[in-house]
Amino acid sequence: ITGLACAMASGRRVFESLDQPGGICSSYYVRPGDGRRLPQPPDDDEVYRFELGGGHWIHSGDPVVLHLINSLAPLKQYRRIASIYFSKHDHYVPYPIQNHLAHLGKDLAARALAEMMSAPRGHPPTMADWLEQSFGKTLTELFFAPFHELYTAGLWTRIGPQDAYKSPVDVSAAIRGAFETTAPAGYNTTFAYPRHGLNHLIQRMQEQCQIGYGKHVTHIDTRRKEISFADGVVVGFRSLISTVPLNQIMTMTGLPVDDEPDPWTSVLVLNIGAQRGERCPNDHWLYIPDSGCGFHRVGFYSNVDVSFLPRSARQDSSKVGIYVERAYPGGNRPDDSEIHDYSQAVVKKLQEWQYIGDTEVVDATWIDVAYTWSWPGSHWKAKALRVLGEHDIHQVGRYGRWGASQSIAESMRDGLMVGGAARLL
Image 1: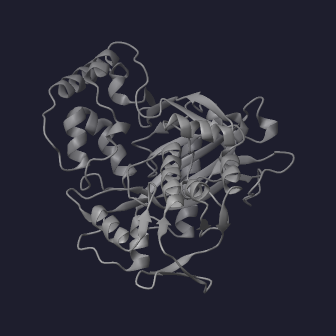
Image 2: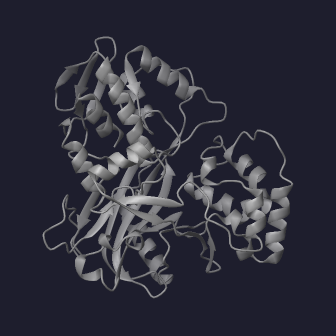
């Protein structure tokens, strides 16, 4: 979506490697019992709506950008409902866990609160160190350690602290939460979503852009300033704006950086359409530290909005649309057989929890660069961005600049800003 925003603001031609716009911010549709992906809903609307990388909700962002998004694709507003689910004990705790200690029992809550109040000061080098320093040993062992082991595909003990805003530390809120109900906290307590799906926003944006689809880049010659595509076409450039993930464009250019590249994690998302189970929660998503299958989050599209369901199921919510996320070390994609076995294990687990009954759709999507991380003390990102800039290649967006998690609105803002500047060059 950053690239589309940049194209809108700059008027420049865009080259997209895929056959459709939007990247991971794309919706698609599947009829019950039919595994084919449809780019648009059929006239009868008897389809599940899914997204390539799981639910993408619009939170935070500049008011002007949000107004622009709403003018392109009218938005609906939602208040987040999210929990941690300890499956081994069949116990739910509202998110974020540190603000709802009363749900953990008096003894555990007292111990966790004491550790948070006496947390040492300092600058912890790793995410694991930061989590324990911030939340104490009790909460780390109970939730943060097992969850982040899954969420980062085992990197959490070696990478630097990141995304602190996702786990806000507020001791006063923790104290209140040990005795009473507290207000929602975190970066996405409210969020929005286009009334007619994320694809509606993408379509409205691409109508204002010049886009060449199926243009997979194989090499960028920084000396000749030429881009080579897999179809044999070579295009020259004076300056290049790129949303390609930073690690990938460094490979395309072959430019040297004397630092170890920072790591990333890939994510396998299972999109599932099924009969709604008797114990299916009403949460929008759950954080799960002990799934037993390797996944760390389960989201419920249709709990956010029934429009994700086939039209005939929207009145009684007899069905449910779900996304299930599992992280892998960067680029380590499982083969088709492994994905099949994993999919069966996930369906069985969700049925054991009585979240779902019979399935109608089970569709796997793979996001190669899903989350970007940094080694402690790493200068790789800064050096890579600098050497690219010296060759008139300017990175933009969450993955292009190897940044922390970024909302759709923030990504759109970055694209509009850089695109507007490019128009003036």
